[in-house]
Image (cartoon, rainbow, N blue to C red):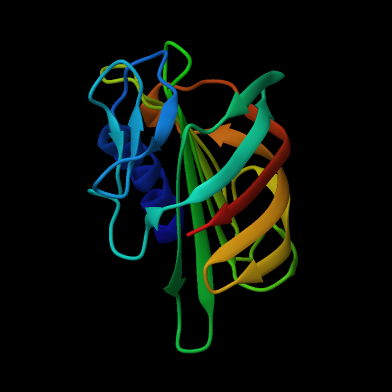
Length: 189
């Protein structure tokens, strides 16, 4: 339960840290290691994301309720979950639409397939991170369903595919499930 709320908070924090205006596209790394977006001063930075999350290079895409979603800003990191287990977090934000969409994933490290369930640390969170109208969805223990296949992973890179049916977080104002299909990421961090 704690991981789910942490990831929802991380997704919203990521949106705030990266900016939040529409119609931005990254133009490449700036002097702080973030991506400067064209036509404004918004930067993709790891500020306010918590320890272990850094700006990642690569791609993160999905279909969200049938619409194509592509992350403009991506962050990732490996964290020590327990004495014997590590988790990988990948967070992406899309600023091309009127409302930024942030998708965050937490999974156990190691190549293989994980499904949302009692024995799995797999957690996914989605946020329409617009100030004053932020809605959130989650797939975690007891809520939603889905799977993620980590096809390759090193200490600083990861590749995978995912699909989720995320349940709305009622206090956010979201009312219907969100369907995330054809998801993939290929990141170096």
